[in-house]
Image (cartoon, rainbow, N blue to C red; front, side, top):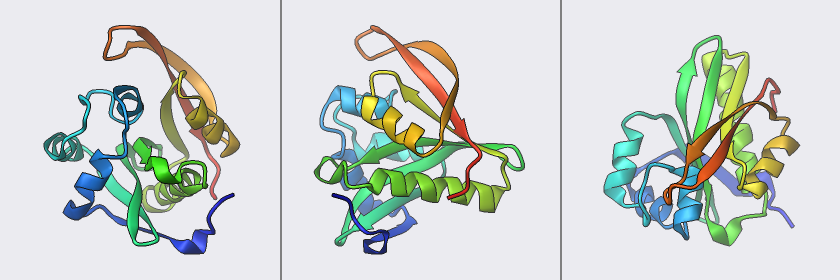
Length: 165
């Protein structure tokens, strides 16, 4: 069961959102998918540091509560924008809020930056996210080996779309 988009609001991140975003990751693994360089639990200081190099950090508000976050980590006007730090509060996962936020981010990239493509990166173990990205029309175009926080080998998939939602 999903939420109606009319029940959701998107706005720029505010400092009052920081503690809510920090608590969205419930484990080191969960945090690794969204903030791979951060240590668990995510702190407001670490989040602020991450935001220094991000573009258009946005949150989704549902029933008065900040429930999702994403930003761009790279935008090349006329070429591509890369969405990063996508995270959804565990209490509302599976309701379509992540998909909504990705559509908003992609549309912003196409409209504000006149890009030809929108990119995302996703770890191969993050099945739910990979399914969502492919449902939204993102297709893999490359992959690379990385290491997780425990030093294990993991695969980071790069996906892209040129669909406007």
